[in-house]
Image (cartoon, one colour):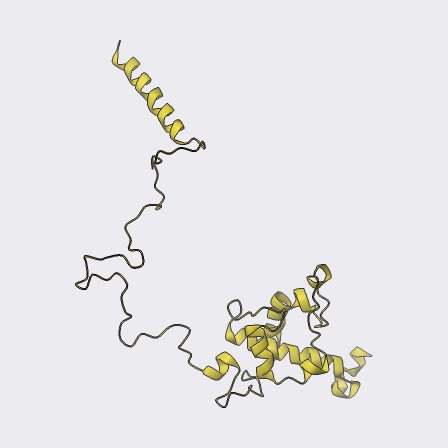
Length: 203
């Protein structure tokens, strides 16, 4: 038997072995890891002994002076909407500009409109298929909230509404607050609130 024939037979045997290792049938034998895909890697698990450190402990204390990401905030009031005396901030810290309102509109339509509708009426597409009713931002209860409380609700949620502090940045949440105020004012506005040179456009 020539060497070429032997090589072909060995190739068939090797291929058959590999196919057998890929079987989905349960087995008491440990699998053959042809491609580990990082399923097995050198690591320390909690409470394991370590020969690397003199005290034998795997878990290490943070370096002195380390601050958790959640603990450090350059501006606590901006981050929480709560002032130093534990009361909600009365006024939005962002400057009220056209850019702020347009940015707030984009974020509101992205994160809030699915439940609250683009007008803030609470008749979005999500509650039409659900059992809860989102708040109408034009209700007196919500209109009466100060800016910091609205920011706090957006951040942490209230009742059936989830919080969005992980999805929406601090400044984006304040921009949403500014846009919510603009929506509320638009519902309660009168022709006297419209500049004289623009009144003809809305009649």
